[in-house]
Amino acid sequence: MASKYEMISELYRRTGAGASGSPEAWQAFLSSACRNYKCRFDEQMLIYAQRPDATAVLEIEKWNEKFHRYVRRGSKGIAVFAAADNNKTRLKYYFDASDTEPSYRGGMPVPIWQMSERYEASVIERLSDRFGSAGRKALDDALTDTAKTAVEDNLPDYLGQLADVVEGSYLEAFDEENIGEKYRRLVTNSVNFMLFRRCGLPTDGTFEREDFADIVNFNTPETLTSVGIATSDIAESVLREISLTIRDVQIAEKTENNNARTFAENPQPVYAISESNHSPAERSSQNERNSFWRSTGE
Image (cartoon, rainbow, N blue to C red; front, side, top):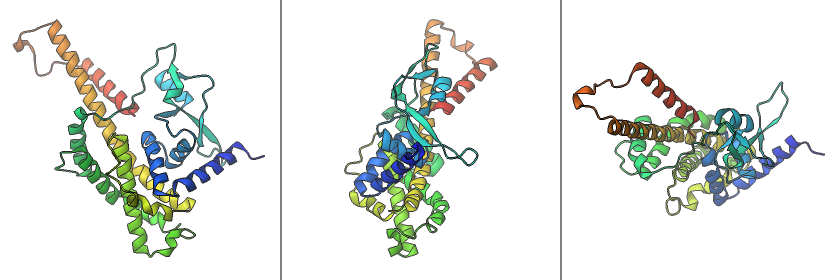
């Protein structure tokens, strides 16, 4: 009888083969992966296989300790590959946010961010600062430019690894230049698709089937892993910046609202308000809150 690890390994193999079988299947995988962009590619593939609707996953200990939330009895874990322990292969289990409830200590809300118009200007500015998508006024244009720039800047790190695993795949039919162009185009479109989906922008009419047609050439586990890791890593680097920007805006809005309420309840003459109107202790407390949001931000 096959072990649990062997069964999950086979599930991973079959799911990968299915995801690379057509442009539509690859887009379905990307739609799931963008919600758990902090996970590794292999984890994203297994999450897609077992819980494609998962929105935020963690191990049960982290739900307990970090968010003071417990996993409901009977919830089924999502099996993923864990780091080898003394050269022994093993699995670990994730649970989705929807499987959890606040504990008796008062559970924290899960900070799953959603794009809103009030964040867009700040997000566009940050993407311009980090990735050079300057001059863009619309979020969709900024995301597309950012995807292209991020892929161009990082793809050489991954392209060299692809050359070593082409044997046995449909990519063998193409020369080195064509392989590189197919890889670049597929990763760029895949990263851009993940950004659009995670930010809630429409993908119908923006992306065409042809944009992902090359996925069928990455028909071995090794070549699929090569394109999957590059897509996952690069998309994560952009989505983390978007996440941090949204948290910064939320913190600034909350601080402004708190200050407005305090001023309304305790009006002071204008001349009594100094430029440094926070004590060192208050500034330290604010820094701790900022650090919390950055460390827990989805």
